[in-house]
Image (cartoon, rainbow, N blue to C red; front, side):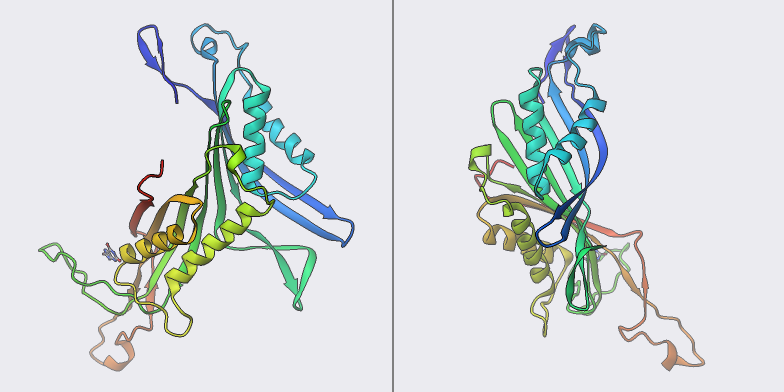
Length: 310
Ligand SMILES: O=c1[nH]c(=O)c2[nH]c(=O)[nH]c2[nH]1
């Protein structure tokens, strides 16, 4: 955000609209199939509207209500299904080209994971169910054409019942946690990755590029977390698994310059009720757990290519 000096102070400002929710249906008359997305859009405009802050003059303000209406108008104008990234780019292009006052637009979209339902093995024409993990995107576009684009997934709930442990950590007078090579591992992954494209021209032209990348990154994250179906892969810590997941994404996708992963450690506590009368009933054997979500561990890290601009 660019700062200006106002009355001897450094001043920075932006304004926008949050949580503009829109659902869009496209109907293909050739086969009767409907396509559906649900988006939650957030907009910030960096614009030359100092007068509204310091001189009570709103003549340079794009009203946030106008921004909200624009989302619905542009959604209507899109005649074909499009990715959240493409819609964010379209909005950002609009705001930076339509208003002379706007120098940069920041558009964030959260897409709900609606996916087509299958009934008796057949794809349903107009039925959808909610999957897990929200698709996120953020587009920052300047009037000059300079672009930053990132995508992500939020709340991808994953659990494995074995092949996880935690040993060798610092032990001191505050430490109670036993070391283990056998525990549950449960998390809800939030991953955001930055694409290396720096202008609109450098974005691949295929209409499904960003959804294909999203699905492929999601798959790499899952495959790395779980390992092969029969044997899995041992996780010595959330930290180690997180790093392997981040590295697999950077190694697999050359269009991605950096990734941030946040993985809460959602503890499943062993249920161990001492009962001297009947010890066999209560002995914990990696079977009965108390699921908890608070307090929980929180592990996060970013991995970038050395020359990437994060
Ligand atoms: O994988 C883990 N990482 C930690 O940092 C940690 N801390 C803790 O109590 N349990 C775990 N598990």
